[in-house]
Image (cartoon, rainbow, N blue to C red):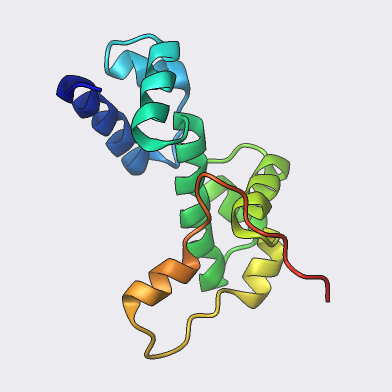
Length: 139
């Protein structure tokens, strides 16, 4: 992949990072960098290992995890706050990436302990990318 293409893909990724809570679609992202949606999807996957939609959902789930750990919003409020339009899709994708449903995550949170190094806390609170999380063991 040439440098110009990498610059364009970085621009798309930065836009997704900034505007994850807004409605974003592939055609709009492609128009922003003056390429076709198919070309954008192929090049983005080549550069980052996932499609723009997968990357967007990962960003939304990361933000949702933070909001759910705070505990002051319901799962539905978090769903809409991060830009998802469907609670079902949000819950399904959250469970795929995190390994537990958002309601369970909200109740139990992540295993972040006081005094834990920030790099460790970030690692254990980050959703799994490019693969699905292992399902939580049955109680």
